Image 1 (spheres, rainbow, N blue to C red):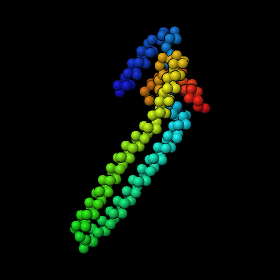
Image 2 (spheres, rainbow, N blue to C red):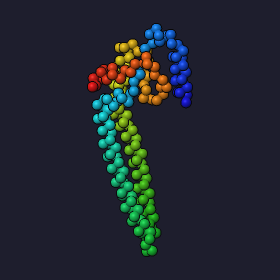
Image 3 (cartoon, rainbow, N blue to C red):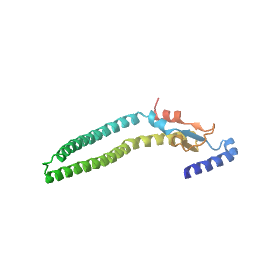
Image 4 (tube, rainbow, N blue to C red):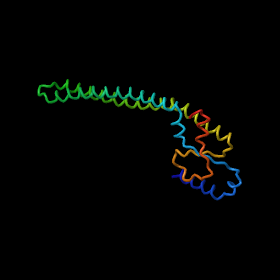
Length: 174
């Protein structure tokens, strides 16, 4: 909410100082960073690598679930047996708890690992895109470049230039 308020105040200030814009002293641009990332081939290969990593983690998690389900079925069968030994039942219950704890622990570690891998893979791509935007802004005399992907831009004036084509050219993308 605070961000919306700041954007509204900033927009109001910009609109009330129209004479500054008419003199051409402030050059504004905008870009949708999602389009830049989607256009970069590195982004696609990073996504595929991340998907492969996640699939390996998912397979391991499913194997743990299968192991748990099998032992749980055995436990239920034994529970219905009137001749079942209490010590064995307690051991089986502890085994189930151990498998469940391993599964939860693995899931947390997998999520953290995937998150770290995502940062590792996408950080250089993001830096490359930001550098291209900064270079285009500097080369073309823009005072501000707004990223419309965040959803916080409430108005884009016709004078604001979409720099996506220039950034694509800077990155050597078609």
